[in-house]
Length: 151
Image (cartoon, rainbow, N blue to C red; front, top):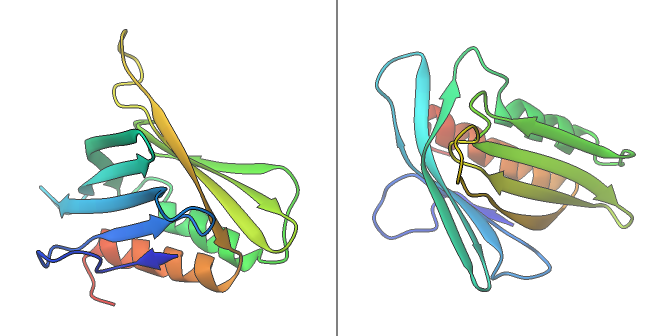
């Protein structure tokens, strides 16, 4: 389940909660931009015993778009074999998706800031959503967040 305005400070954000365990989630927040070529934002992962955040994930206008990836998953609501994946150009945010019987999509969100640096860290959580409508809603919410549009 996603919620585009899950906060009280009126700043744009999108929160994805796992339908199997609502304490597992991902939040996109703190969007800003220096120029017309990119959007910067923070990603937070939460699970019991885990809180991880990368403060400056960058979406470039010429880069492969996360929303395009999510929209393709939503369009394939009848399922697919294997794993599909996407990552930012800097590889600090990666998403992999699997389809399971019953019409559910598992999205594993992985944060790895500074992937080329020795001593770096990584964290991941998996959220399960219904294929189709929930995936389409997630794609729309993320698109609105990244473009700065109001839903």
